[in-house]
Image (cartoon, rainbow, N blue to C red; front, side):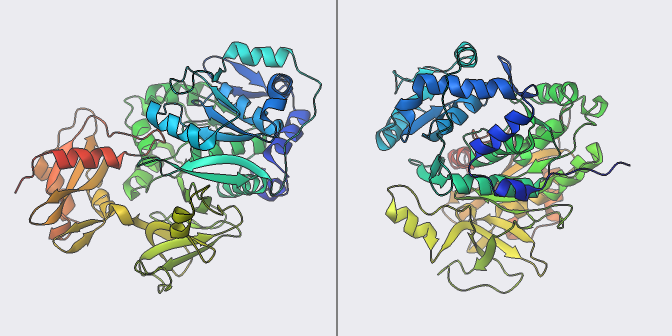
Length: 506
């Protein structure tokens, strides 16, 4: 068997910006396909021309200014993002489906010099709409301009955190932080030259950005982008394009692929790397994926304020049920949830706090929120977890997701693990619902294999094998599909609202 020739993530770590990474790769293999969506394909060489064509049209307008991008994954997003950086601008990445009121508030805060979108924006009628024809025009009319991208500690990219409730908080990454985050992503999911990526998570989300923009740039790879996430379409692309790296993300992505009726007959043998992150993976999902594909899901952990934080790897250790060990130069501590200052003994649960070279230094124009999260140089994640004696981190739950039932703490993940042990269950999410007597009750939402119809008692029997009485769900509802956020995570806010609207069964 031929050994893999893996690229060294540390070579990326030394770059001044990801535009520098791009230009080095584009010069080495200009004819290689860089990215393809349902509307357009573009080579590395033509992407270099497009950046200069964009600069000829908009360079002076975006140089040293904030620029907003409202786009779904595609050639247009990738091209516009790199072009703004190439011109020395500061791109702010937004979900394409931003509601009108939220979009208007965010634009009032950012006050961008220009707005680029892949569709008409009701709240920003003068936004520049980028289409396949527009990009082709940039390629065909490249200007004689130089790279004006900044480097090092200069500002690079705005990301937004906390978008499920209230107005998202803006975070500015420097060029150095973007590069170091991308390099550590590569550390977690080692790459060969010219990997073929199937990208699913939104580029505007930190996981989708690192997995979908940074990793393909760093290995000179090819990015394949489906029009939408539908398991049948994704499997077609994996098979037809000989995809080697699955964009992956939360467990819902893997669960949906495994639930496809014909998955066992399809040739997905080119797949090599299967990253996981964005939400905790039940052990049963790991087991089923491995049995079906022969591949491991390498689960990691990160957040918009700093990613990646930890990851399971072949080279540095893997332990199912954990999110792995800290990536290089990152420190992880478990501290008490009351004060956030007392370090907990090995194996005891507490709040996870982190620090590292690619972590945020604060929220823009939001000193109050910054002070809550960033204390004494540590980012307090709001996640509950444990560290074992080998340094593997286990996420127990979010502090805010904890259910308080009759004075007992119930962490949804433990209930989810119990429910998904039933062979008919394909996905599960557990939330709390208000109850006058108990404070909160445990409510579970599940999806099941096509043609399967486990009874309520069947599911309760599965839970009873793992859970003490107070952790047992009071209600279990079977759904056709769990609602997802734009980042592909299960939408707990929607389920919590549903649970609180449903009648409580005594």
